[in-house]
Length: 150
Image (cartoon, rainbow, N blue to C red; front, side, top):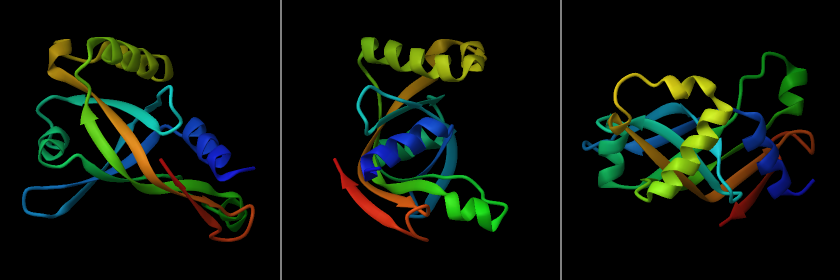
C-alpha cells in the first residue's frame, strides 16, 4: 500500500482530527474536531462557532499542525497502528456553494450536526488543506513513516 493510500485509509476510518493553532501570546492550542473528507485527497472540513477561539486564531495565522490517530490499549494494537500528522492551513470557507457541499459531507458523516443549536449564521465551515503529511504505518515496521507533500 502506498503512503497516499494509507493516508486515505486513515482519513476515511477516523472521525477526529487534532488541530494545533497559535494563540495571540504565541502559545500552541490543540483541540480535536470532527471532520469530513473533501473531494481532494488533502482536504478536510469541519464546522465551528464563528466566535470560537479557533476562528480568532486562524484570522491571525491560517497555519496549523494536525494529527489523526487513535489510542492503542495493547501492543498488538500498536503494531497495527496507522496514523498521520503534519502541517497545513485552515481557512473559513466563503463560497456559498462550497459551504453547502462541505456541510452536506459533514452531516452525512455526523447526522447530529443537522441539529446545531442556534442560527446557522452562528457557525463557520472551515477548510483544512493538508500540505506536509507524515504517514506512519507500524504494519510495515515500528514507526515506519513516509512523507507526502501537496
